[in-house]
Length: 382
Image (cartoon, rainbow, N blue to C red):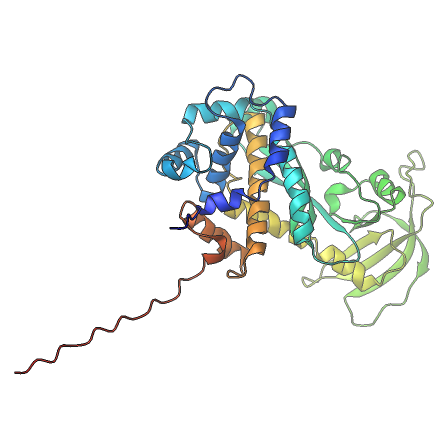
């Protein structure tokens, strides 16, 4: 009889294990480890993400009930206390590097054909409790961490992530994002920094963002716009120096584009970009695409375990966020590899309910109806 792997086993085949082992060796993550290897820790946390477990105890108990099937994965169900210690002490950099390696593998297969690279930048706050006050600067108003994401809307995957205390300004992490020359960066008012915009421009990148209501500009040229359309103004402008010429910025002598767009609510947005050539409608559509990163944050918070943390230390929180994003990439890759389930959300739910079953990702849909067995009646001579 042909052996059938469990669904978890099939998904784990997508993990770049060679890169995983290199990262473990690089950070000496398995030094003095007697029972729970970093691989076993990773499989346990990934199992918790994909199965929807809300605690370490639930993760361990669920894995223990499938002990025989875990044998084929080369791992065993850990003890809860051992897994908690591993989350607190194992280097979180291992899991961040595994994310990067998996992303390089996933991006090639998921990215749709496009003439340009678009990166949506945003952050989302995740609540912690007061047990994390030592590192998260916990107080009544900043009670958690921020997850910072650079997102590729064409592939529907994050291409960069970072974690910081919630009170840290978004610009700190934005300046650490590796820039891709020629790419388009789209972001909101949380990244309002003329100097950083100048850095993007100097790197050959296009940016699309918003101007504040009180930000004055010097109009160089007024361009014609269609009447009765959402674009009500299209101008070439210069951004003035601030505070009475006491603070300069790298864009002070650079022509920029200011576009006014009326959205469905009737509100007018002041968009600004260093693209002086593209139609105003293209710029407006790029900014509207920023909504996709909001949908991404909503998806991972509702589908994966990223709102309730399994540990209180900074290391444990960073590991859980990295594994959640790895789980997202694996789900995207597995979903793209099959053709039965069209909805990514429905696919994630079916993976959750069939995770340890002997099923393939290609057979998660409704089972075909079985053939009806015809039982002929006996002809009785009465």
